[in-house]
Structures are given as C-alpha cells and as structure tokens.
Length: 199
Image 1 (spheres, one colour):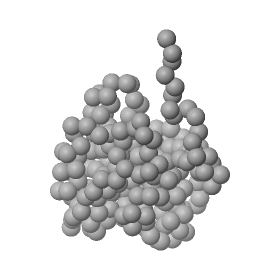
Image 2 (cartoon, rainbow, N blue to C red):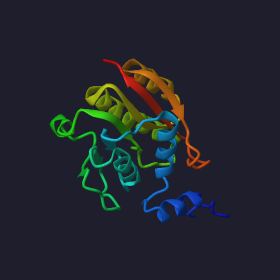
Image 3 (spheres, one colour):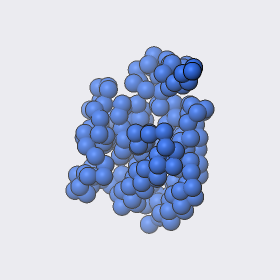
Image 4 (cartoon, helix red, strand yellow):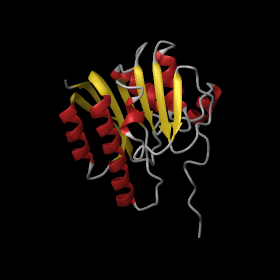
C-alpha cells in the first residue's frame, strides 16, 4: 500500500519566500492579500490577533500599524519569532481569557483570527470546531471593535459557513469571503472579512 504524501510537509515557494522575508510561516501572504484587497491596516491602528502563533500575522500587522499602533497577540502556543515593541503577546486560551484581559488593550480597530482546531481527519467534526472558534472570535470582535472597525476570521468551509456569515452581517455593514492565493489547494479554509462595525 502506497502512503499518501503529506502536502503540508514539503516547503512550497510561499514558505520559502516567507522565511526569506523574516516571517516564521507562509500565512503572512494570506493576510497580506486580505489586507490589500480589503484595505484593512493603517498607521496607528490597534489590532487584536487571535491564534497568533507562529507569529507571521502579528509581525505583518505590527509593521503596517507602525510605532504609533499596537498589536495584542494571543495563542495557546508560543510565538516562533521576536516581536517588536508595539506588540504584546499573551500565551493562553482565547476561550478562557477573561474579558478584563481582552479589554486591557481595547478598543480595537481590527480583530484578526487565524484560529483553527487541531484537525482529526473527521471533516464534519473539524468544521464544527472551526465554527466554534470563529464564533468566539466574532463575539470578541462584536464587543471590542470600534464603530467602523473590521474583523477577519478563518473558518473551514461547511454547512455552518452561511450561519457564520449571517452573524457577521448582523455586526458589520459589509461582509465578504476571501480565499487567498496562498491557501493550499487541499485546504478547505476560507476567511470571512467584515468591515464597518455597526454603531
């Protein structure tokens, strides 16, 4: 029996380019494309990055917001890179972190969530857990994003996706799906990008 090759094991050109640019992971190019298409990040913004490890999104956001901006990053796992002075990292569970801690750096102009469950191979179960993570991030965004602010959340495509989009539209004026070019062909992740937080 031939063992199926792991498509995530071999570095592709996105992985190599990310390392060459000083980022720990290829995911930086996903956020870069989302930012370019949705015009999200600007100098001086306050950003909450949920599911920040290994750190590419936090590094990219910190450069875009500049010294006058702030990035608050959270993940269960430690970051795999040094962070600049305008970034604060907290290692912990986004579900367990209390509101006082989350609100310490609030309000936010943008909430980013690249959170994903540890996949099991059970697609329905993985989709369900991804939906739960997305909804947690959206709930945080709904409370802590300033009027006019934005939200980006990763979710696995499945039967819960329409509900996730509907919930985002309740909180934000505009909502769209973006599947960045840097997403691997075998992945069923997609990003809900919501802008214009309702007052």
